[in-house]
Image 1 (cartoon, rainbow, N blue to C red):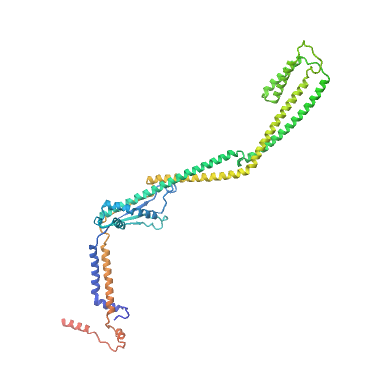
Image 2: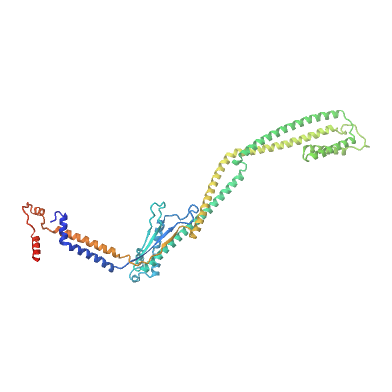
Length: 493
């Protein structure tokens, strides 16, 4: 008798001894049913293949790959595209799948059935691997025909490889085109910055920051030149005043004591001396030299005086107006003219230097404002140039990566094992079904035996009697069944 549903080892032995056949029958029957199911259920065959992800042959530090998205996301995206209706419908029509369901089922149902029969699973990376990206993926197709399962698996694997190649090439081409467009825009902006910078340099030529030190040096030199020109002008003016004073004194003395005109021989000798002096000066100086000009003026004046002299037979007058001036007065007059020319030249030179000083001072004063604008233009130009150089570098890298994609030298999918030809069905598995049947039968037998043990109200032990009758046991009657068995055995002997 089982107390409160708790079985003791004695109860278990007693139940097994009486109802052992129930456990055997239930287990064998369930196993037989599982075995029978393997013959009755429709068979499914699974063809599978392994696709490995091959790394690029060119190291990433030489040509940086453009397609760097996660393999999980890429495969998920490719799986959605490949298992779409537009990609699975041609497979159904190509291999004439589900011919018995074409009339009754819709095309969407057939596509859904084929989609459920295709499974794509990523390979787990090796333990301790630095790169946690999957090393590849498995493609398996389960179908009721082994040949069709292999063909569909081959077709789906080819679609994955083709889709990956197209995806990478398209992404590389799109990236290259995008970078090319950005590079053209950056080049246009850089050209605009170049034009602005060149226009600014032309506009403020001489006032640029790098010319500031030169302007200061020029300003110092110009001030020195102005001071020298001012001193030279002052000396020339003093010389002119002195010469005019001497000329006035000698002219007054000459007019007070007039004399006869100089003889032609004296004028000729003077002309010869001046011509010799001019030849000597031309041998040393240029025709524009002040001394050369001075001698030329003296020669011209002497020739003009000799032409104006009266002939020898013309009577001479003793009045001061008709007498020729002495050479000293003529030389002083020439000296005054030369001083006037020097003063005019020095005055002009002084004005030019002052104008140049004003220009240079204006440049120096405008340098801070020009420097600020120049820094802004230079900064914008440098930013545009750096942006252009970076885009050019990235575009070149993208072009090389695109070439690698076209040459299949980048990351590619490689089929390690071609889709297998399944010889045994993957469903139903005989071992699994038989094992499941045996396990189910054994569990059912345990349940039945437990119910039989719990439902048995017979008293087998002293404890059962005390529990049931609530009275103490005074004596025990031995089992007659055992005695009868012994006697029956003696009788048979």
